[in-house]
Image (cartoon, rainbow, N blue to C red):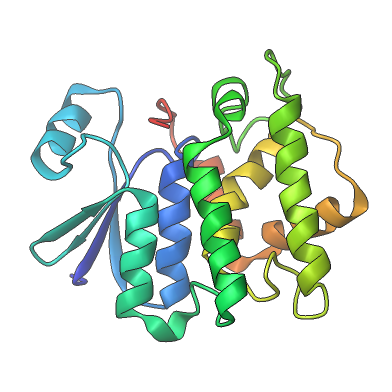
Length: 214
């Protein structure tokens, strides 16, 4: 058994889980994962035993439990500094952290009216998400214009910022959001990232679904 265990929710729905999972995959470390059936009594019992907030994701490292996807990312960046979870450049690193924090605490309309559903396609948007979509595309363009010659991701090389926005790429695909050429190119690059492909394939093969917990 690996020393690292990640507790996650449904791969089809749990956008918080995929962020932590992608960050952990980027480290290259061997880890185990356990899918908690959210919304069920066994799932609630399992979370009560191991998650201080009764939510996912939770990273178990020996006797230590780290909850919250952003805290997990920061912890992994400390114990695996060679993984490049944050950009090396100080200014880029600050912007990446700012973008992750905004994604982590904002975009309420997007979360409410465009829940993550990897298996679905061309779902109807029921609420006003225009401002959130516009802001996200503004962020993507801002970072891509600065780093377009360094690689296809927000800060050139893949980083925690891309893990943070990968569920948004999934949502934009599910709800058929129109993107400009810069944002479309970025979204396509995210969809080609091997760990994202792996997660999406597992989500599509998942036998049933539960609520997102986001």
